[in-house]
Image 1: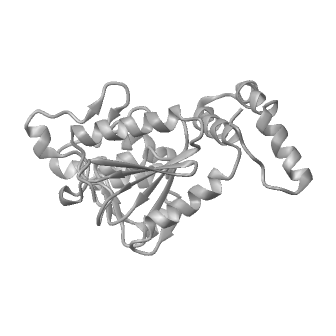
Image 2: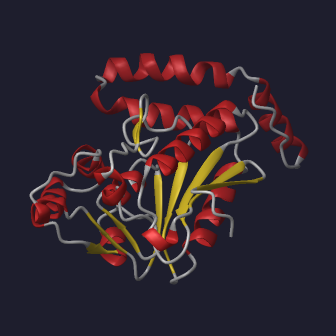
Image 3: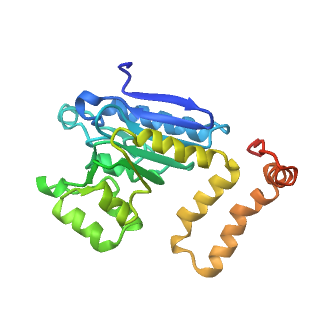
Length: 255
């Protein structure tokens, strides 16, 4: 495997992004942060890409920030997107995190930037920062309560103890649990189910779901119309209806 800190591979309409520092538990240094940030920009700028899959090389997803590199003065932050090139500004297109082994500290915070999580059955997920008198300040304290009950998020944050993949699935944090070693394949299978859909509809649906949390009922219908309306009158929408009538697979053009 190449020694590049982040690997990027295109698989049809899916961009696979791999943190490639297995000997350092895929800890995030400046090179990893820059690599993830560049990959996310590639995903967002390429109209032929529908979604991304983010994973880690080797036996684990990511152990968080590379403390040795940080001690030497490296700051693994993107000026626009924050920690690891994505923690502060989530991608506009869907991303699936494929977790083997562990996603802890900043590693879990990266995974929480994804829209869907796939984890191997032996994976552990946690934010242990309080065990070192630190705070999980890379987004977990916002994104965990968005996905799971506040009491469970509070327990994870205050004890610092990890949860199992089974527990994560039970509380709705994890979408799919795979066999050990199978998280990436399971994530790609899920990605294929999404990539077969109209990219405009996928992107608009994500945008609405992310933004609607503080909308009033009236605002919901107004703003949903602003986002969904152009999709309804798009070339792809006509293609979808035509393909359904003609009993064939649609050919999406992203317009």
